[in-house]
Image (cartoon, rainbow, N blue to C red; front, side, top):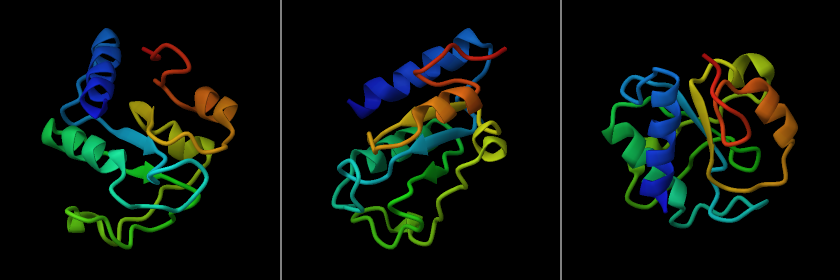
Length: 123
């Protein structure tokens, strides 16, 4: 599933004449399950790895995990902090990927993001 998700991001960016390489992709939801702070082998780690391998810069937002304290097999992310949840922060990314379906205000996310599964990418 993570590879398929990254392929969808590439397709969405390409339709807007943007590239994943050097793109800024916000990943929302770092936890393994919705509405908890469980970081035991999250799919998000695989998504981060695939995005990074393809040259993207990919910070994250997760209200349950303000800072990465530990991800097994991904110690390079220890100390990484969640970005702020506001219009200025979210709108600065080329695309947004929702990796964990936390209870959140997805209307704000759709309104603020340039490109997400909730609307077409802005040109």
